[in-house]
Amino acid sequence: MPEYFFDQHYHNIRYGQEALNLKEFESCTFSNCNFSDCNMIGVTFMDCQFNNCILNQTKTNHTAFRTVYFNNCQIQEVNFAMSDKLIFEMHFDQCTLDFSKFYALKLKGITFNNSSLIAVDFMAVDLTAAKFHNCDLYRAEFEKANASKVDFSTSRNYTIDPEKTKLKKAKFALEDVKGLLDKHGIVVE
Image (cartoon, rainbow, N blue to C red; front, side):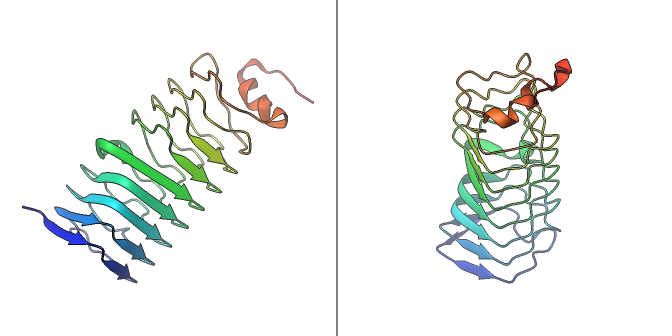
């Protein structure tokens, strides 16, 4: 049976490779913690916050993220596609998620604020009603994604093929709409 932790605050901890396996955290806050060496296996985070944490290359196999907020975190090269998909809900504010993967996840209503999403894999993801506020989406991949009602209007550097991505009622800023026409070689001035 997993160890259970409720309403705990963790500060300045560097977690070892198997330090969190088979643990459940509810309403916990992690501040200035480093999870870079972690292989999180069977971990549950419910109503938790991560502030100023480093999760670069963290393994999240069968890890549950149920209403989790990341604030000012480094989360590069993390494969969230291996996470537990039941009640999967995350939100990111001022985070760097470069080269991370969300392949085939249901991310309805997810929010990314002031974040770097360079070369992030959103292939086959359900992003319905997601918000990308002031994000850098350079080389992010959206093929076969459902981006209906997604707000891209304040984000930049995206290249999305409307023939391979569902974009019904998605919002874009006029000055950045060239990212939808890139494959056609059309020049927008």
